[in-house]
Amino acid sequence: MIGHLAGSLVHDDGLADAKHAVATLASLVVGDTTPSDAELCGHVWKAVFVTEFGDIADAKMEADFMQMCKLEIEKERLKLGPDVFAEAAACIMAAQTMAAIELCDRAEQEAEQELHEKPHGDGLDKKTCEAAVDHMFALLRKDLGDDKDLLALLEGDLANLQADAVQMCMDEATRAEIDCLMKAQDLAGLDACER
Image 1 (cartoon, rainbow, N blue to C red):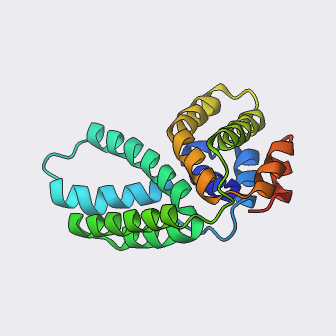
Image 2: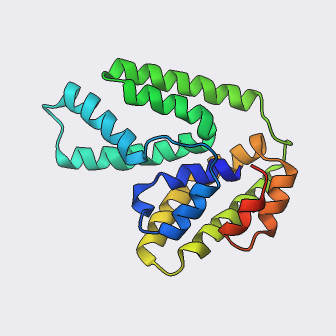
Image 3: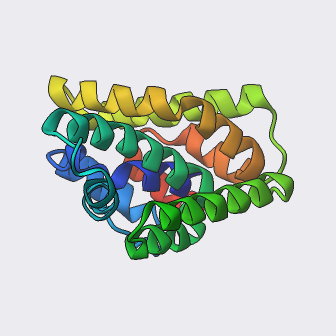
């Protein structure tokens, strides 16, 4: 669970100024070399939307799309985890048409469904997972300190991820991972936790 949640946030270009927090999050994600949220969304915008809908595309539409896309990418990173998401990201970056993006979406949904049908965790209950997710979110807030702009950005990300993080915990987390998470006093303390 820790790696999935860290991976969903470490690629957020908006958090790049929180260098310490981002570096700590990156250390919690094993083997994730996928493009940033902005790179993925930018590719979809330029290669697909502008090409297919250039006559109606404007700056406001692009800004709205980029924000919506970023939130959706963060959710998919969380739900799929780094390995499965890497396949989805490669598909997205190779897509040049709306039809190709739709094929990527279908493959991603099938992978997500398979993960839900065959959970890898200990089957933790919702209350335990809500507490674990809340604690990890508290550690993230603590690590960002008092930078109000970054905290505001983080709050939007966390609100977007809350329900999916709890579900992913129920599907994927182990008791040992959650026990370790609950003992951590800061993000660096999560390094010792099983992922």
